[in-house]
Amino acid sequence: MAFVNLQNVTYKYPLTQTPVLQNVNLQINEGEFVAVIGPNGAGKSTLCYALAGFAPHFFKGELSGTIEVAGVESSKSTLDEWTLNVGLAFQIRDDLLDYVGRKSITGKPTGLDLSEKKLTLPLIYAFTKAPKKDGKQILSMIKNGKKKGNVKRVLEFVEEYGGIAYAAKRARDFSARAKEILAPFPDSPSRQALLDFADFVVERDK
Image (tube, rainbow, N blue to C red):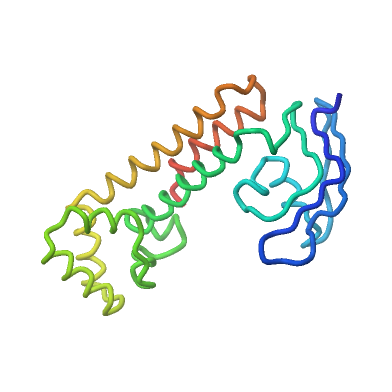
């Protein structure tokens, strides 16, 4: 029995008309190495997303056919919940890096989300804990656009009212939940890779 088994798999992303994958049949035996090659837009990444359960569990869209990995059909697996929790942990960590990341590492300046007037979890939580007067002052600074002094004050506000600590904890919680979901799966390099990735998303610094 093939370790990876795809039968007549067709998938298209939401709001698109043309399938990225169409009637794909593929069998890969355990221990076998396979290279997936092709030009940009050929569907290489989407094929990998489908095998990992990201499509359609995380990216949504329309999937038909059968995908089995280690004898488990993707439509019957719990990987949709895994991808949701890892995705949330990844996004929250990304939000945190806007406050605590270093430009030399992340490649983007601190406070970029603020300059775009995005209200992310660390800031939203701080608003719930701060006195209304302080919250209104910070909101006014954000509406007035990015100024060096304003960004510094907003960063201090988020730290002062626990936004950084709270968001970091929530990211760890989602990562831990993702790892719990993998508990029923047998030990394998694939399972270990998913466990490692759940750790990576909350430890990354860029």
